[in-house]
Every structure is written in structure tokens, then in C-alpha cells.
Image (tube, rainbow, N blue to C red; front, top):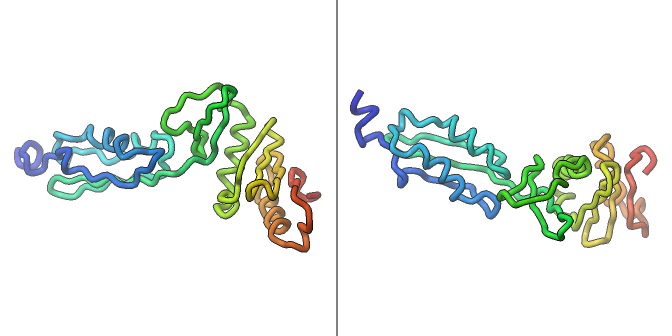
Length: 197
């Protein structure tokens, strides 16, 4: 019992924790602060689930894994996302949020985050294919039914409306903007009523 639970052989020290997967939005320091709470314990008593639960609460963390490497090492890996959207507050400041609407890096933000338009916008952005998301230059939403994205530096404007029927809307947008015979010389696509784009 002494060897397993109290001897230094199985004791987790800070130097025995390996952290990876951080980025500029989820720092390795944040990850290490959580994992570091387990130091001083026998590796047998370290709670991987507890560490994972705390890491999952960090805005921007999409997945966390913890593996014990006996006798006294802990490997912590996270998958950290980049911002799903940048929100402009009324004072002109920008705030990054993840696809769940959580503010990244605990930046102060006004009450706009609770607004339905913001949540609808994030719902749409979070469900778009990466190929479309990479082309987005800006996003605007005056109301929850008027979400609009600008693509390719202003070449195309897509009016999504709200997040309903998004699978159909994405298919219609894909067909229109990627077929020169359909888009022609037009630069705006309105799929707020996807059966009548």
C-alpha cells in the first residue's frame, strides 16, 4: 500500500505532465493549470475524468484526452478550435467566440451574446462546411432572421435568413455559386426561402 499510494515511485510531479494541443485561443498554460492540480498524488489516485471535465469547460476546447503513463507521467492532449466568429461590440471592440457561443480567453463582452441573432449566427457558422467558412470575409445579423455572410472579400453575399432548413440552403448555395451558368454576373444569393432562391 505504501509503495502504490505514498512512495515517490508513482507520485506525479509537474515535470511528469506533458501537455499538447494548445493554440493562441486555448493556451498550454491554461491546460497545465488544470492538470497541475493533480501533482503530488500517486498516479493511481489521479482522476483523468476530473481533468477532462475541467478542460471541457474551457471555451474553445472541443476534445480533451488524458492518459496515464506509469510509473509517474501524465499526458494531456486537447483539440482546440479557432474562433467560429468575431463579434463587434457597440464600443467597436472585437470578441472571439467558439461554435458554442462561449467567449474565448474570457474577453469581456456586452450583453449582445445573449441575443438570439448571435446564437442563430453561430448556429449557421458552426454547421457550414469548412470550405465555405474559409471563404467568409464578414458576417452580419440585424435580427435572428437576417444572417448574411460575405464571401471572397465581397465577391458574393449570401443571405441565409435563419438556421432553419440549413442543409437545403447549403446545397442551394453550393449549386449556385459554384456553377458559372447559374450565378452568371450576379453577386448576391438569398436562400432565406430556399425553395425560391
